[in-house]
Amino acid sequence: MNKILPYIAVIMAMLIWAGSGIAVQHSLVFVRPLTLIVIRFTIAILLMLCVGLLARSAGKQGSLLSLQMITVRDIPLFLLAGTMQPVLYFIFETYCYRSLSS
Image 1: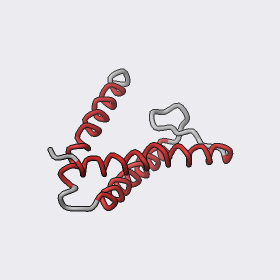
Image 2: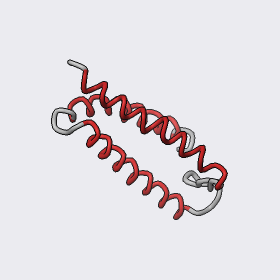
Image 3: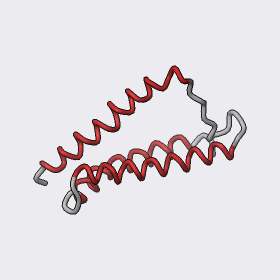
Image 4: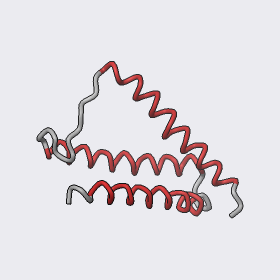
């Protein structure tokens, strides 16, 4: 099972990523772009909180859900990366889908 789990995870990520574009385009009929971004980020935060809680309860190092603690020195890099990739990416993507005709 451990050998097939990464493949399942990659396939699930691909399906979610591919489906998100369709969902965004259909959702923009009902909500404004920034509202949709807030909704998407809220869902992502809640899912990551669940992953973090599962990892904490798994506890032992080297398990599937074990997480590595970050250092204070790494926080500015995480903030920069978090601003550039997900935030700016989703803002541009959402406004782009709004301007598409199909």
